[in-house]
Length: 148
Image (cartoon, rainbow, N blue to C red; front, top):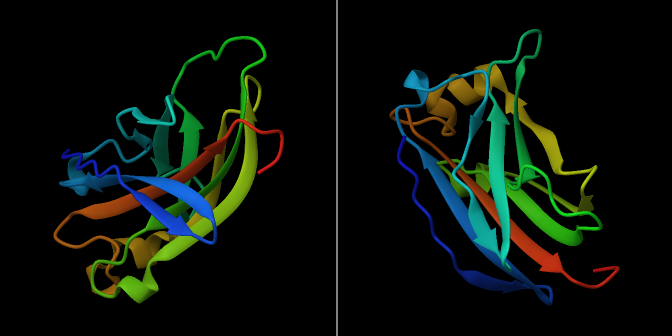
């Protein structure tokens, strides 16, 4: 698996995002029940992207942003505004983006969502898995304030 990391910032509607890009090559040779990125840092906090491409009795591709620390210290919490993106390599306008505002803490350490049906994801003509490679991005803004 090749991980390509691009940490940059972008200004969108007054929110400063930092971006992590995860490029998964040789996707068909990976553990297709659960994959997770290497840990990456945004605002000093460690995060991971996790995906479940082939869960039993599930016909869709889901992505999650999660706290990378196995057990954050007592009282740890962070307000985040973030987007997870499944990049369409054939037509950027067809990339699937889910965004939310969430408070992560010791008990609530991940957030995820359905992105596309598995049949769509695995069809290379659809653009999400091309040459056995998929690209996922996390755009994250972490706030120390009680609200974002």
